[in-house]
Length: 435
Image (cartoon, rainbow, N blue to C red; front, side, top):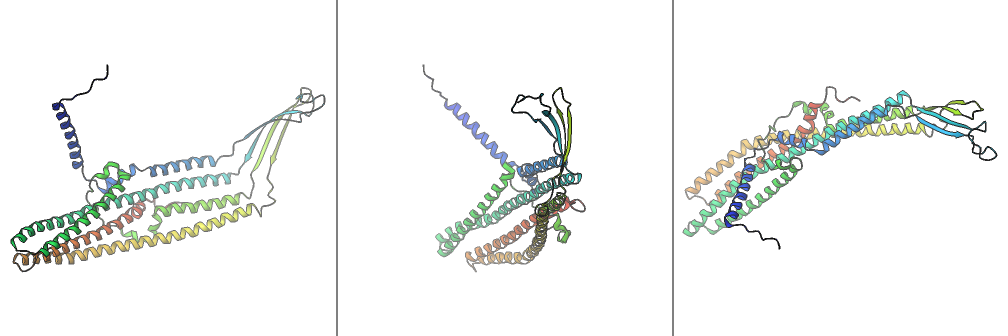
């Protein structure tokens, strides 16, 4: 007997469909009711969900563990064997009949000077510190990137609001023109001009929506589902500490602090190369057992490498480390200059954008608003065409979008300065990292 077909009554199907629709409605309502996400909340979520930061922390732990082992002496070596075993004659392969045959067990230890071990441990500790600073640099870059994506979406939403308002107005005017054309109170060219303007606005809305989608995709990398929440209030992007333009601030940049550790590592490696001019020596002690008719023996000794070719070996290693140190010093100096230039130029551009925004907002907006009011008054009194009203309104929206774009550029520069320089500057201990 085969399986019975499954039937569902129409009433049950209707109830099931209703339950599914209610569930979907509840999900949509929950998504709509999700509170806006502030910039600080976005940064906190991103840092808690950043594998790169966890990887950097694990690297620092590994380097710190290696520093402990680097300061220890090498493991001793257990040595066992047979000396002087006969291979022919009447006593061949006998362990106790020949007086020279001995079973031997011994211990050998290589000795590394305390200075070398301290330098080796210091080098690994510097590696651990460098990994910690690499984590700080990754964290600064993460906060900057999240802030830039959050700001891009925030301004995309504000930009769409302006475009939508103009879009709605043009659509309303098109409906008005339709009735006016039928009544013979408007010209066909006015309708064509309004339709062309609407197409241009629609295209700009599509471009703006694409930019917002890209910002959401970028945020999703760190925020997962929280990236869908709308941005909250814009932080104060017109405020940065005055000390930011001081020359010493550049040394708080995480990338520069990390390279300072590379400089300290190069100095330590040079000292190690100089210490290696004095070779490591080894000692050995062994107990040797012979046949019962012969006495047992003890041997001991010391092994010291002979540095007869120091000019071509140890001295060349020292010269190589000294050249590497000079290279790292030059790279570091170049990084300091480049970082200072980037900081000062970004700060100057940020201040310029603030001044431009203030001047344009004070001078341009009143003019465009007055032009719209005059055009509307003239249109109501039949002294001008609808085209002039739409052009005045378009000019006002363009002015507001220009101010919004200046504010967006200002915000992006603020984010770079705030999260790459200001935050690390506040987190740097007094006196900065120690060599």
